[in-house]
Image 1 (cartoon, rainbow, N blue to C red):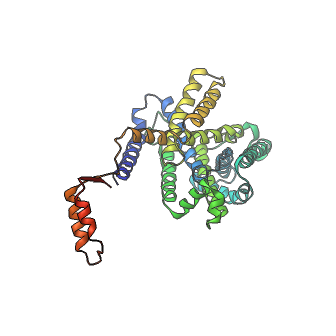
Image 2: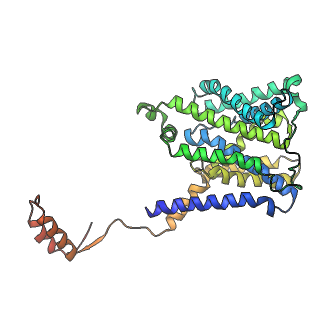
Image 3: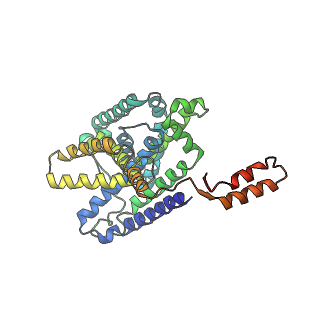
Length: 364
């Protein structure tokens, strides 16, 4: 009970500290670039948490979640520019459209597992990249798509308090949804799929239906993250929106922090996002940041396969004094216990008390 209380207390402390840091970030950021980079890092946190709905719960490693990110971004942008839909209504409609599209795609993709599922997810990204690059008359093609920003006065130098509003609104529902699923019967079924899908199915878990629901929820949240990207930055490029690197970053961030924890993807996004921005600034237009990202992924897989949070928790557990389950019982305590047992009506063995009284000390 003490360990459970300590874990819950540490989770609440981490939540309070994280919320305070997020709310106060515009106040202590030294310059507009740091503020803008912070928004990018927090966007990564939103996307990696969205990916964790399917990767963390079911164990299906999708490298193609950039497809939902791009569809959400372009869906929001096209509804605004082509149909004249108000910005935040377009964001919601884009999320609904992606959720509908994710159902048939999930039915087809989730019939395979392991490396086959990874290949299918990558193929989806490449197909959408070709479609949005070639359909120039509708999507803008390689020239990109300019989306009117709904908050032009919320640029970092002008309104530091409002700059993180979209990210705050995006992070809250995702965290609440993940926390709810993690403690529900549905979440228990998803974890059973992650540990052993065949055994879970033999025990009566509707594995395919559970996987499909998690897949659609993850795709919808990722699409909403892409729509927020379109509303905030206002410039869409198919090569970036449908980049396999985006999906790889989501996986790396979740794995680094710990896919089985609510704050794992957030921690991973902070580490990886800050590292990527640092390498981009330090090495300019080179691709060294990709090399560094690959090395970081290899280090995580080799040395911390469960993530930073489980590794640190295990280390702290080994440093704590171990509580023994063996308790010393004196002869007087044993004699009193035997007398109590002998006084019971159903007691049939009266010799245990005399035999036990002769013992000086026992272990139980």
